[in-house]
Amino acid sequence: MLRDLRAARRIKKNEFFDLSEYCRNPENWRGGKVKRNAIPTVIELCKRIAAHVLGLSAEGNKIILARKK
Image (cartoon, rainbow, N blue to C red; front, top):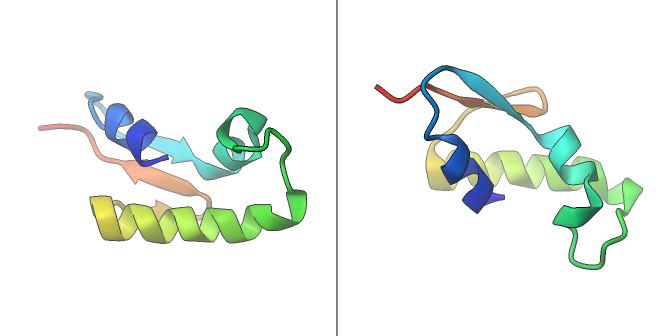
């Protein structure tokens, strides 16, 4: 997720990174099977990691990607 967020930050305008879509995508899970009861916990952890590591804030289930200056 952090790699995808860092790549997405190279944009020119404000956008959102949707954690609901990202966490429900089976390609982003190692086992390939989405564990539906784990999604809310994973979303919360992703928001905390993005805030701590990258300094990005979240609005609901979306991380705000500010445009590059």
